[in-house]
Amino acid sequence: MLLRVENLTVKYGNVEVLHGLNLHVAKGEIVTILGANGAGKSTTLMTISGLVRSSSGGIFFHDRPLHQLEAHGIVGLGVAQVPEGRRVFTTLSVRENLHLGAFTQTDPALIRRNLDWVYEMFPILRTRRSQLAGTLSGGEQQMLAIGRGLMANPKILLLDEPSLGLAPILVKSIFSTIREINKSGVTIVLVEQNARLALKLADRGYVLETGRIVLEDTAKGLLADPEVRTAYLGGV
Amino acid sequence: MQLFLEQLTNGLAVGGIYALIALGYTMVYGVLKLINFAHGDLFTIGAYLGLTLLLSLGLTDHLGPLAGIAVLAAMVMGLVAVIGALLERVAYRPLRTSPRLSAVVSALGASIFFQNAVMLLYGARFRVFPHDLLPTTAITLFGVNIPVMRIILFATSLLLMAGLYAFVQKTRTGMAIRAAAIDQGAAKLMGIDVNRVIMYVFLIGPALGGVAGLMVGLYYGQINFTMGWVYGLKAFTAAILGGIGNIPGAMLGGLLLGVIEAMGATYISMAWKDAISFLVLILILIFRPTGILGERVADKV
Image 1 (cartoon, chains in turn cyan, purple):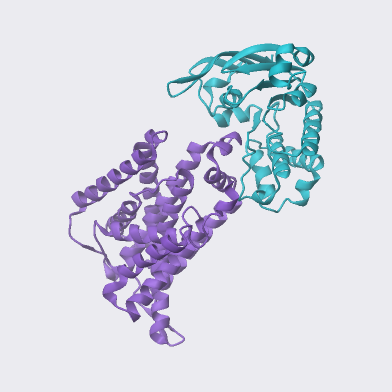
Image 2 (cartoon, rainbow over the protein chains, first blue to last red):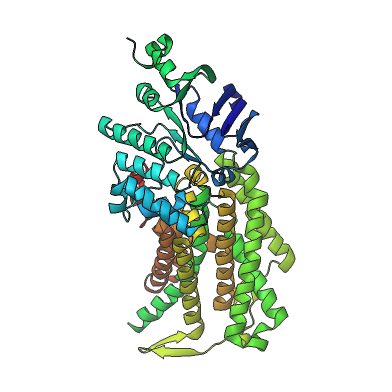
């Protein structure tokens, strides 16, 4: 198993927000985590990335305990995140943002190759490489955030709400890019509000409700599940 | 005209010193959103360490005045940098996740501690830099008399600023510093060790502040344990003037404030020198709180 989360508990102050979470991701999979606002999806990703500390339980990547590492060490192992709200470095150029994505990488040839790959995937980023990231449109910033994540040469990419605030046509192209990234060998964990789209893309999914996993199934199974249909897919 | 040019060169030399101190405020603020109130005292420590080393090592005798002072400056920078990094470890890092006010109080406490430590070690009286060790000649340029020391100071501060700018713009560590100043969380997601970035900032800022203290000692010839307060306040004004958190802003703000102050002292009144500086601060805070090169707030949506 590439990534295992075992009995993960997270507290913000005295408030427990994740109550013993269990999930696993196999190599090459696309796994989606669905849930309403405040269910703990982003907290889960932030804890995997080491920005939020767990109070008990463990996170294992290739059997290495991530929960004992600092955030920067986790990226170095090949776990990259594209955070919610994109969080590109607005007053730095597109090129600088991409190079920051490769901060843990030491092989210039590999950085060069990844940069070409990102530019090939998102040609608009090449055109705008000297512009400040803050001047890009929302869709372009999302592309930059994903590209920046890929520059870390990740084995697993955590994507938090990549469709947030984007026009439907852009969402479609972002999702097809995610499939492409997955085909190139990067395992994907996708947190999404747009459950239908996420389940169409994913192999498996988890449903998170107020800090607990309440359902776990293949994407097909979840798409057919009556409860998921009423709660997350708008009925019918 | 001659008076104007003379005061311009004087203002630029003092402004360079303000700029060096202001860089420490602005870099720390950029990364931690904290005003390091002990920074002015690190500047004082630089001046006193400089005096001690100058008197005890006889560097200017062995190496000649220029090389001697250069070596002295490097030593002061190194020592004050270490003190700055220790300050961060002891006074700020334990409070990293506490409310911001706690760190501010800790900064004020550190300032009082340093100031009193200097007083206890060196005494409360003014200490005098030995003038016979330093170049006292002046050159005449376009009919203006300029002390060589003034030129050396200005050139040194420009050199240090250019070096810092190149470091921040061109190196990997510099890029990490800029990224952490924009969004610490996102910087961590890039694999940047933010604690290390903060350590670098607390090495670089105090090094520049410390060497500025030495420069004041060399320029004015006398130092006092409270000097960090006034210079710190002036440099803080310069940092705000340029736009706090902005590195070129601190450089510009420092030079500008030095010139404004020199002109004010010459053409208005010497007694109003400090008042003019703080009037500048008040006007900036009222009319352009982000400073001249302040952060583009619009981008931060």
